[in-house]
Length: 263
Image 1 (cartoon, rainbow, N blue to C red):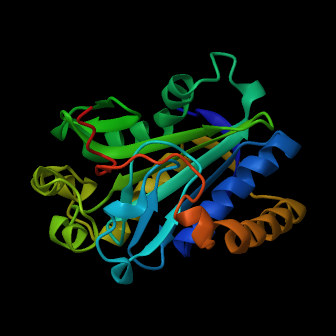
Image 2 (cartoon, one colour):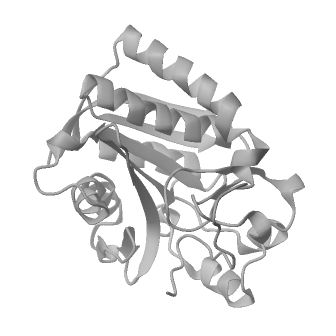
């Protein structure tokens, strides 16, 4: 069952900016230490995470959400109390089977794939989907994005729908094509297959994922260095309007919801 050895930074709840900063910090740290890191996280408030090249014009009302931009590709994602996010960062040298996005997805999706399969059981088929998704039936329950750095390390992070997506709430903040909102409300969630609370399902998911990892706690020096770098990145980059608005970057308009990929 074990997929990899890793250092676990556990679970935390932060601002969207701090979460993206921590993900990048651990990617940078892995290039230095050659360790693989895993962490789980929630958001202090509903948030919109723009992909690296998304135009922010898809955001209808910024007063309702925190907004930041991530380093990874894909499409815009809306996160809230019904989602659980996680990230895996590591050195590229550990990936003998290949270092591209597809290779990373095949290897590291197995952590969440196995956990989701264990929770759902025989109630539905769980499988890898297109564009770095994990599907329940033929619809995505989790989406992922990757970044492969020049420092010989990677970041692989994803969001799992633990509870159902609230398409009405998303509509208030995001200007997606009208057909997307109905599709968002039809997407599966772990809660469709359990009788527990959202928080209990999140804990069950994290526990099951960690059983697939030979995990140890970070050294104090690792924890300190990650926190210091994340704090700097958070203030200088992920809370910076120039980064969030994508000034000076070639941006894509017509954003779609991350777990829907019609192209």
